[in-house]
Image 1 (tube, rainbow, N blue to C red):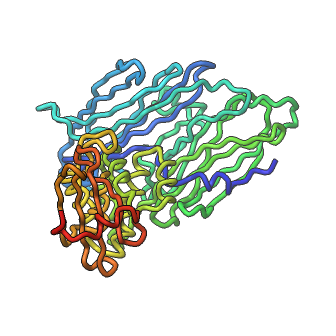
Image 2: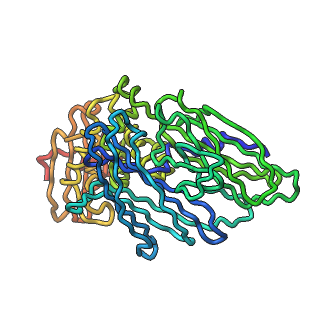
Image 3: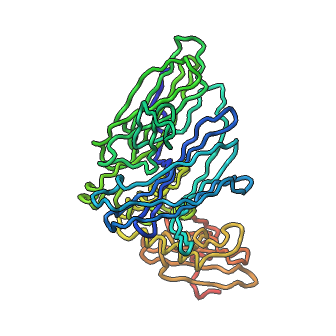
Length: 462
């Protein structure tokens, strides 16, 4: 069976495995990442990586103490399985060091049974216990035992040292020292992308049986920038695979590393993928308008997942079906953040200030057109009047009619410049303030001739 890389590429869109967050003080940024490996038939071996990145290491020669609190919780039971406070000291004495030379990271290892878990890392001020920064993610632990080949997570690394004798080293495994890169960022300081992955349940029936392995790097458009194909014998029950790519010539941006295994004897394939970013600070300075630079400086770089989901939900009136389909595939907060930034970046190129104007209209709709019903809850932007206000702005005139014994209350909104002049009729049929659109003279909006009498009557008529 021939492995089709294009099938995998069609399923990929800007999904980060690592988490990163803006720090609120001291120019310290916190990163968190993890990888899952097989421990035994029923349990997962979990490695959690954290790293502190000093954005401005030359700002002071004094060492900086950073206090962290790590918590691992059982999501279903709502109980903490582990909790630990850590103190990490960053040495700023080397004023020539910058960026990746100033990182400080470590590793937490544990064994988990089948289930769903939450990992959280908080950076706090030890003097007043105030939270300065926090990251969290949900982790699923599933048995690796399967009739088919299964893969561990694909770990992105800053370096891999083979043939190591440092068996007590924190990052030692399988005769190697595997140094993870929780930032998933590469550039002048880290020009080579290293990766590590394990494959299980191989078990070839014949000694001549072989596995096809393909490793590739693709950009967000699906273009393959580097690709390797090779064979591995199925002589053992498991395999350890690792390697490196030179990414020094890559342009700034987001890329995906794909690792695939093809079992031709049983006609199936499995794959893992992980995203990484190429970041050249010098290039960012030379090109101030670079997309990723502006993203790092935008509000979307550090907003919560709940907030970015809300902002996406609120653009449903101007987004395309393709946008919705893509966003639904994004399971990682970083991918969602970047998606929303790119969405508005393109809109702002057409009309500067459009984003702020749009969300100001959303806020106004929430304040003025919300009501407590099962249809919209208290979100006025979801109401019919809210939608019309967000799309077309404030009407030139509003005709308001109260209820009588013969009719429900209604409103007519007039737009004098919209399509040469147009009207919207909203009727509150249930008496709870839910003014629903019943007809409009604007092209593309609901039109019902049964409401023409209301829509076109002069405002003096009762």
